[in-house]
Amino acid sequence: TGVKSYAAVDLGASSGRVMVGRVGPDSLELAEAHRFPNRPVRTPEGLRWDILSLYGGVLDGLRAAGQVDSVGIDSWAVDYGLLDTDGALLGNPVHYRDSRTDGVAEKVWATVPAEELYAATGLQYAPFNTLYQLTAARSSAQLAQAARLLLIPDLLTYWLTGEQGTELTNASTTQLIDPRTREWSYDIAARLGIDLDLFAPLRQPGDPAGVLRPEVLEETGLAGPVPVTAVGSHDTASAVAAVPAGGERFAYICTGTWSLAGLELDAPVLTEESRAANFTNELGLDGTVRYLRNIMGLWLLQECVRAWGEPELGALLLDAAKVPALRSVVDAGDAAFLAPGRMPERIAEACRASGQPVPASPAEITRCILDSLALAHRRAIADAQRLAGHPVDVVHVVGGGTRNALLCQLTADACGLPVVAGPTEAAALGNVLVQARAHGLVGDLTDGRRLLTRTQPLTRYEPQGDTAPWREAEARLADR
Ligand code: ADP
Ligand code: LRH
Image 1 (cartoon, rainbow, N blue to C red):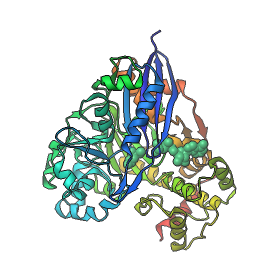
Image 2: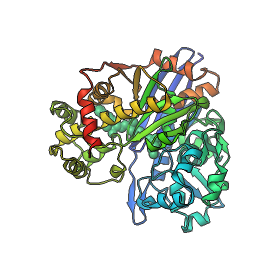
Image 3: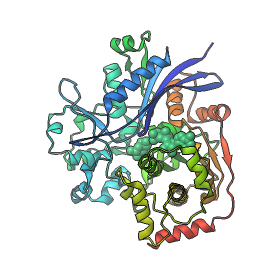
């Protein structure tokens, strides 16, 4: 009675899931219908996403979800598929960690200086921003053949519905959007020879995005019509929408493969100081700006765990908790950790190069990673408050990292602020809330957050000790 069901497809860099949100006037329950690994594949051409396996996972998930009132899709940012004039996919989407963008930024900056690019797009420098990827691909046969570019969630939406669009929050990660107008940055694109006609028209979160095609209904066993609704299709936009904050004086950290740490603002910060501090202005729901820094995140640990033959995470974290704190730290914001492979060695090398004790055992390396992440969280949240002139009293941690109690406590200690951890599946919840709202079930961002605070389990971590050891560790990194 009055309860509606929404399927949230949420594709992270490490796993994909289809969650079902049941939303009533004062209730919100989230259940997992299906989870599947997201394993990139190294082909002779480079590192590629296995998009067919992901789409297969989406279909399996929709079948497992059962009858729903709408479907929404979000995923990691910046990456895309190219379609030919028949609408057929040209090759597997390139992974943002692929090396094709090495050295490309300098070429771009020779045409549009980095300062100007920041002032126009508000995006922090990351080698994988779509703008650099498109520049890297400029003379490829594939791009020459392409009639359409669809970002990953838009590509999957197209496969489900046959309709094409470019959802705004994710479009803002291409570095081709002006965060003030929330429209394409025509001047930047023209100067870099990027054809904006490749992109389908912009779509806002909450806009209709078609209905499931008959073949999809048949394959998933669902009865039509099932609408697909555009959500904040950048996973981080959906996750920030589901930060259960009560007021405005909060910071957030979306922890998963990445840590995205920052503030929700109502206008971008485009100063030169902000550029130098590598802060990004991505677009959020309801005219908000996600002012944040990308930090390497649990990727560092994922890659080590892979190198160690996948030991059990719980036991590893218990051992790491027993290792003395802050013996060695690395710069978890350093793009040197972006590429896959040899992660334990690379972390040890970074410690050696900065004259610190070299962690050796998995427990020691894990401790080094978690201390380094907490330190990077501290720096990002302090810098964001200063650069935006927006003080906070609390740090909300959402995403997979909320399951890591040690990381949450260290983050509280490092920031000297209480951490409220949860929800774990924030991106899926933000996705569900936008669908529910498009269908009139919940109100604005504030209403959605109130509903989350009332319905989702949250854990509070009070800061322990004083922040002096963290300041000392910060100085150690700065002195390198
Ligand atoms: P993404 O969406 O980027 O794929 P997630 O938000 O799913 O990432 O977070 C994945 C991370 O969450 C893992 O890399 C791991 O570090 C952490 N995590 C998952 N399960 C646990 C657990 N049981 N205990 C501690 N950490 C966990
Ligand atoms: C997190 C994320 C992040 C981007 C990165 C490419 O999943 O979307 O916000 O910067 O992936």
